[in-house]
Each structure stands twice: as structure tokens, then as C-alpha cells.
Image (cartoon, rainbow, N blue to C red):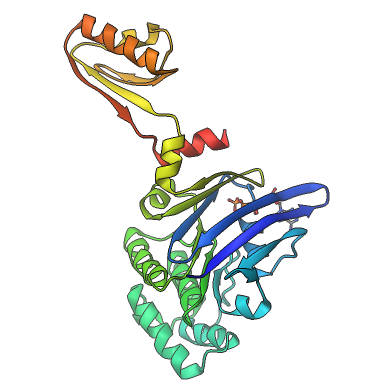
Length: 295
Ligand SMILES: Nc1ncnc2c1ncn2[C@@H]1O[C@H](COP(=O)(O)OP(=O)(O)OP(=O)(O)O)[C@@H](O)[C@H]1O
């Protein structure tokens, strides 16, 4: 199993630390989601991993050793700035890009056509890139990153602008790579998608890692809420000491309790007030965890 690790990685621009001593591992065989608000440092990190931006300090390791230029040539990379030439046919361009990575032309052509087909674009292979919609240009860019049996995938916002069918096609393709033991690191602002897909998550805030783990780990560490369902209006929960009402909608209340004693107080009051249909813990969603750690 290969892994892609960053160790104490830092990048400064002038006196600004865009990436500030971050460490994490994208483990082979897993989809690792890389999330954080605008300007958190995701693109800068990915550029350093790929060697297109110099590292101020720290190290990138692949398979346990410092990453080399030769390693990086075997990585599939989807940069934030989509680098396709508008005036060249999609297929021709894919073959050209693959050849730069050492893939023979015939094999590149076969693979590009296959991948374009998988993403529903086979009939557009001969179109100039500028004639394709933005979503279809994005698909071509994805094909470019996935060609040539990459040993690691570093994908900056690969899902942005894709329709749901293309997202599903893309997910299937990524899973084929993780099944080979490849580490896949991708950034995204689509938390629902990240929650659905990722076996591992790294959350950045202001150039620092503020959460790192499996979605289950992060949910365990996040604030557990409780959902109360009564017969009548549940607005009274606002007056229970130690209870913070996150949302009250008629008979249904979502609350955060300061401690177990507060949950017991809530339950006792609820029972006094009339039939209680439900009082259950609610595991935090990724969106909630994200808001907590990036606040
Ligand atoms: N070439 C550069 N020169 C100066 N500052 C830069 C440069 N590249 C990035 N930065 C700064 O580094 C910080 C991190 O930017 P980066 O693009 O890595 O964030 P990001 O997490 O990818 O954001 P987004 O989600 O908006 O793409 C930002 O404050 C940005 O302005």
C-alpha cells in the first residue's frame, strides 16, 4: 500500500503563511477529502505536493521516502487552473498530455477513448475543447489526470461543475484507483459529497489542520445533539438550564446539552409536560463538524 504524506509543510508568501506546518497522510486505497474555506491553503498544499510550487519548509513523502520528480511524473494531477488548450481537439490533447508522461501514443489513444466513454463524452472526442461546455471540459481534464495508471491522485476540486451523472461516473473511476491501493487526495467544497465518499478527511483552517480522521472519528469528537419529539409545542426547551436550542419546529426540537445532567433535566421536564415520542442522540453531520472546527 503506497501512501502520500506531508510532514510539517509550510509555504509563506511574503510574511503570510498560506500553509502553516501541516502534516497528514493520504493512505493508499482510501479516498481522502481535503476541505477548508476559501483561502485555507488547499491548492497551495496540492501544488507543493506536485512540485509546481516550492516548499518553504517541511517535506512530502511518497511510499515512505522523500518524493522525487520521477514519482511525481507517475501521479495524476488535476490543477485548480484547468490547463487545456481551447483550440485543440479533446482527444488529440489527451494523447499529447499522456505522451508527456511517457505513455506511448497508441496506448494513450485507446485509454483516452475508453475514459471519455466512461464519462459520457466519447462522441465529443474530436471537438475542440473550446466548443465543449465547462462541465465537459472538466471531464476532459479528469481524463487527463487519470490516464496512465497513476500511482497517486491529487485532484483540486475535481467535482466542481459536474452534473450528478458525471459525479457518479467519476466516483466509480476513483474507486477503481483506490481498489489498486492508490492514495487519492481531492479537495472539495461539496460537503455532502465528501461525507458520502470519503474514508478519510482532512480539514484546513487558515493554513492549519484542524481535523483529521475518518468521518466516524470526527463524528465521535463532534458535539452530539439530541432530538426531542413531543405532542405539543417544544418551545419550552429554551428554558431548560444547560440546554441550547439549535432549532425548534413545533413539536420537534434539536438541542445541544452542556452535559449528561442537562439531558436528564430535559427528559424529566419533557415527561412532566406530556407524551414524549422520541429523545435520541443525533450524530453530527460533516457540515456541522466543519462549522465547528472552522468557526
Ligand atoms: N502566488 C501567491 N502569491 C501570494 N499569495 C498566494 C499565492 N497563492 C496563494 N496565495 C494565498 O495563500 C492562501 C491560500 O490560498 P489557496 O489557494 O491555497 O487556498 P484554497 O484553500 O485552495 O482556497 P479555495 O478554496 O478558494 O481554492 C490565500 O490567502 C491566498 O491568497
